[in-house]
Amino acid sequence: MTGHTFLIVISWTAVFEVDPVDDVSWPVATAAPWSWVVLDRNTTDEESGLFIARLASIGGATGSLAEVIDALIAEEVLLINGGVRLTDEATAQVVVPGCCAGLENWRDWAELMAGQSVWLGHSPDPEIEFFGEDLRVWQDGKNRQAYVDLPRAALPGLLADVRRDLVGFLDALGGWGQRAGLGGRTSALVEALDDSFRITAAV
Image (cartoon, rainbow, N blue to C red; front, side, top):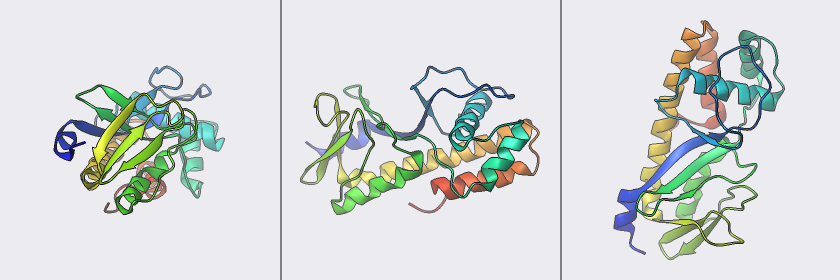
């Protein structure tokens, strides 16, 4: 494997998983169950609404949008299924987070720089294999077929890309909150998400 090509063709994207959610009183995007929604500055208002609905479902928050936001702000930690989606643009191979992986753990990828292993979730059991200074990320570590290769040296730049996208998502979510009439709750919500998902701190 040669790292120089991978630096050009590999992309990392912050995503969350669309598990079924209860009906809510605000607009949400239509997305197939178990699909993935990208989080970045282009996140739509409906996708932001879906993200909040998913957080509410996990935390058991119910009621009006304002009541749900108040409940989420009061939570000590916010969690959501998701993480980092890897795409090799040259081969069209994609690796997505496994079951129970959380977006809150996206920074764990930095541990690979020191040769430490990273848990990427259950089924389909993503697995990382070390080849010297390069990595092979298998979608299914038991039935090894789809994979994405990348050099460890590319990790800081790729993590910086994910952080940039998540910062952009916070901006998009803030705009959604203002348009949804959340007023002062908006900044508190953005701060709670930033704290739980460790977004704006330097990588």
